[in-house]
Image (cartoon, rainbow, N blue to C red; front, side, top):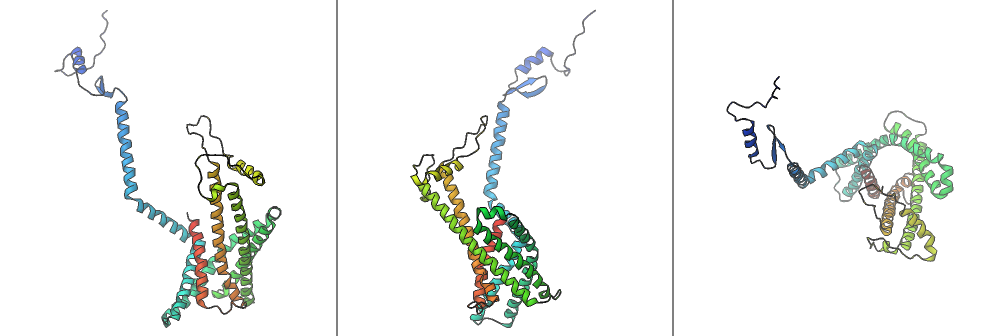
Length: 362
């Protein structure tokens, strides 16, 4: 029985036999391509590599073009998002309203001194002062809940905090209790001012609110001064241990600094803290990070300086705010302050609060 011939690839009638087809296929001048059957396929990785290189170069060009053409759009988008976050937060909205309130008070006093006041501007200034003040009191009614929670947590941590930092804890506790009492009394005083309902002893409640506010501000200022003194001492200690940090000339390579005998123990503790970095896995292609001791010390110093700057700003803002309860309680020397001084102090404290609220949106 004759063996069946295996089926051949069908060709057109005008085509030559298989041997001729192979001969013509071998003679085709195809660069980088080989013919498998009747389908063109890459014969090496040269084509795929070149395609990847072209795609990567095009992507890099498009990315760089986007960075060159749309940097302002990206910056504006981020700024708008931060403004939206600021307006959506109760604290941020309170600081915006407070800035407008005290700015209008200062501008109204300046206009009065320059004889530029008219009945219309006087009415507008009085309306802003009253209505914006009531709006801020309403916003504070909800903010006080968070302050109560902070004060409760401070009381719970009393034993541990007293053993570590007695003076700092007592001042922080007085500040928390003062703001909590101020929030409760201020919320009760808002009800008759807004025309919702009357309360008995309204004058006593308002006076009590200003007392609580005064105690909270005084404790905050004293606590801030204590923290600034502590941070200054730590900065001097770091600059004594690492002399190059004070000159901001930190070498890129790590080297040993000969410590003084009295600072030998502190130096060893600082080195132990700053050199205790997680090791790089042995199979990682990324080389182990080499951090200079001076670079780590400079990072710590910058952090401490930033903390001192922020606490200093808070002290300035609280010192500007403290004249308001002193004037309301008619303390000698503060009861006769005019709207210009009160408005200027309010603008300073409002600027500090706005900066803090804006930083919180980052």
